[in-house]
Image 1 (cartoon, rainbow, N blue to C red):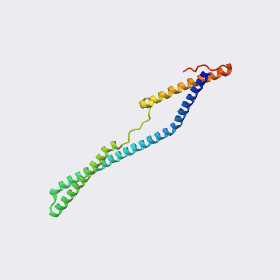
Image 2 (cartoon, rainbow, N blue to C red):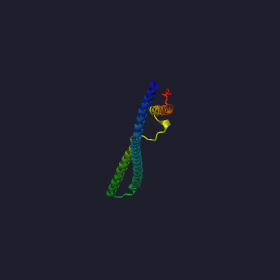
Image 3 (spheres, rainbow, N blue to C red):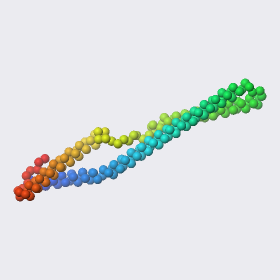
Length: 181
């Protein structure tokens, strides 16, 4: 009779463990959905950062082209300086050259700003979130997984042993034997 009570106590412990594991299993879809949502946010942040880098690179190229155009204009105007005959036309030409140099300076400043945006962009990017494989999971998760699988195997062994004891006691009418572990 004592062995039958021990078997029932063991069955009760196994039932509690099964209930705990089932509760944990029911929580997994919600946890997975939260992780998927977090991953999507991370991917969106990465895409936004990449778009910002592309925009900054385009802006940089546009300003570099403007600098090249203005430098060509300055060269052309400086070449015309020796052909000017009146003092008024010379002043106008010098004013145009100064405006072109100021435009070059502004464009170069914008180029530097775009370069700074490009350089800062990797630091703003979200960390790459990749799906985890079993081998890449943390040691804690691996140990939990090992414990769960060992617990599930032990529960299966115990429950089959207990059910075998029930079957044998039901057919023979004798009390149950010891439950193997």
